[in-house]
Image (cartoon, rainbow, N blue to C red):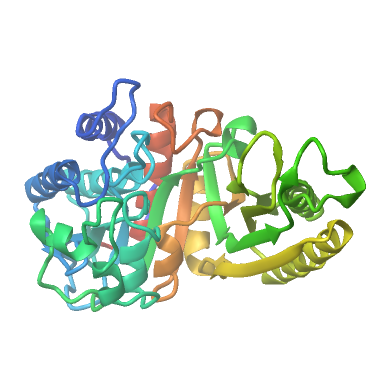
Amino acid sequence: MSDLSNIRIDGARLWDSLMEMAKIGGTERGGCRRLTLTDVDKQGRELFARWCEEAGLALAVDDMGNMFARRPGEDDSVAPVMMGSHLDTQPTGGKFDGVLGVLGALEVVRSLNDLKIKTKRPIEIANWTNEEGSRYAPAMVSSGVFAGAYTKDFAYNLTDAEGLKFGDELERIGFKGSEPVGQRPIHAFFELHIEQGPILEDEAIDVGIVTHGQGQRWFEVTLTGFESHAGSTPMPRRKDALLGAARVVELVNGLGLAHPPLAMATCGMLNPYPNSRNVIPGQVFLTCEFRHPDASVLDAMDHALREGIARIAKEIGLEVDLKKVFDYPPVPFDASCIAAVRRGAEKFCYSHRDIVSGAGHDACYISRVAPTSMIFTPCVDGVSHNELEDIKPEWATAGTQVLMHAVLEKAEIVG
């Protein structure tokens, strides 16, 4: 393989592009609100398309709105090496979540053009539609359709809070392309992303080499007791659903702590009924979720949750309705792609460590149809999905430098 140690991206140009894109949907607190398939998303897409055209790339859009910008290879008949992420944001999102992966990929291509480097395989940049899922749930729906996890009809019929359909909005903003989704071959896929957690910054690590994506299991629990007067119902006779919910929250937290260091366990929603200050709650709805990269650990947490809730309900005299509403298996990324990322970090003497992604990403679905890996950069205080989300320019440069190395290793330099 060619010596790539002297091949460098233009970090200043990358940062300028990130700041320019951040103006589209920019908020007063320094974040971004660029919800998928809105007029603001359209503006971001159009800016990205213009930059791709200026870089000499051929742009294609599939019928889920996924954008693919192609740099030809010496043998343009073979499958491309692809890199990318997403441009949509949370309602109160930051400037870097997803965007770094798209514009970092663009900077790789721009730098290859500057350096007149040719590759055997084509190189493509992807902007996946609706990764965040903040307007249309579930998240990562378009990469999911691409990989066969969802049908196109399912996605088109998703509705937002105002009842507007995904398919209609995709057509309205002019990004319902003609290419059938999922028919584009991929030799290898790489996604650059901010960590969205504190580990890399806390340990002063330049680059995270993502080996796995967390598996996720989501549960909805309804505990039913009996509402009665708070002042006249003796304590031993109460069937307090909120007391049961409090014990479930403690149970879930304990299950996360029982499987360190990678397990995550959260109760995110809790709705008591009738929610009156002088009525003992007769019913509570709550959600629980577990995350871990090992399916056997998720199985153990699942079993312990069911067993624990049954015990809690029996002690208080509650009825239980427990449903598993989402089961997303752990994602082991491709060993050869991981190795290419690792070699890139070592080539440029960046400090690095293996890391597991706690969040879902488009790469997790693309891994079902192509060899895939991810690269993480630190983010300040681990903050993401927040207008205060921030990274340092040198972190963006390091991650993109490693991305370029991994892509070039897979695409093969000519000459």
